[in-house]
Image (cartoon, rainbow, N blue to C red; front, side, top):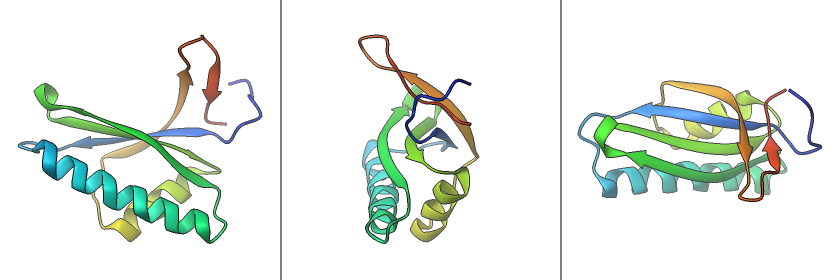
Length: 102
């Protein structure tokens, strides 16, 4: 992928049968806090957003980070399980690209 000058973006996939909105929100909050703590310690990571798809029992969180290892470390510190971390490319509402795994 072409570099945008921004850190790569990573999508974290979760498959959580029976997950409630409240439990999803709590898990996302813990992971967000973990990433924020790492960022305060100068790790190049930022939690961007999360999405719950109740019908598919799936959830997704998106991060900007220098590497997938940083995202994995944020999850390890938070104690939240996930299925996989993959590089992602996002398009903004005006069609601009953001992130993109390298």
